Length: 337
Image (cartoon, rainbow, N blue to C red):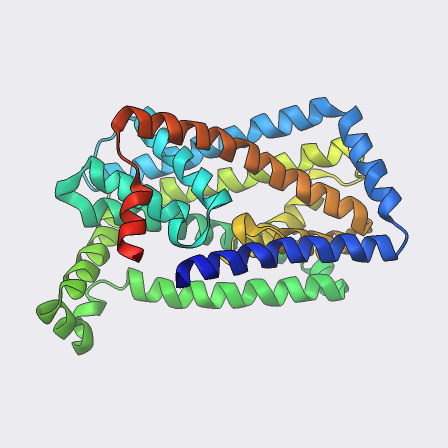
């Protein structure tokens, strides 16, 4: 019940934020600008189609990254099978946050595929997410260093700079813990936890699984490169949607602000970053002289593209459950009760 309540609060917050932005735009007399922007997108539908199709490439790249991590654990799922599980995870991440989040669903399904390496394969799901986040922060910091004058010139971009520096600090601290070999063994608390509890053994196995992944030849390099490529292409999705709206920005401008927008949207506060992404887009694109109505339209189009492929993932999920006869949600529900 508690988890369901949290999910409902997250959903309500996301919808509330979107409603707030629309009310604010309406009160400023700019709601007509939003309608004009949407009409422009409809007239330039070919850019929408191309941008939406480009997002599929992001899912393929992310699946490839996960395959690499699984192989490092000596788990050889076929690419089509892994892609199916990734699509299912994308569906749950977009529509059903909280207790039935995409990462948890993927972890359950992949553990069922390889029951003798349950902890190791489950760990790859979360390692995959961590590497993606680290790559996003690397990209954000690199762009900020390159365009430091721009980020220091406006209040909005200075806030973004501070946000990314905080994320960088958290990432460095977390990296020290996970990359430092045998760190758990040096902390007596974890040693006792491992010896006396099942949880301690699971933590140790997950920790070892992480080090197997990063020490496997080329894994860390290849997954970081794929993650950076994924983020660059995803920004390309926003770029083409911007063309449909006749936004007068070049790709470098998108590359400047969208890593920060995506980092904020990645925070597990609302379903799929709903509302969080839009607020960040209005805030940061405003520094590039993009009207709030246009920024909101652009952000919502990006969100709708992710929902489109999430719906495809929903169809994949239904077919998968029908063919295998196994629905991971039942296990989650049973544990919650």
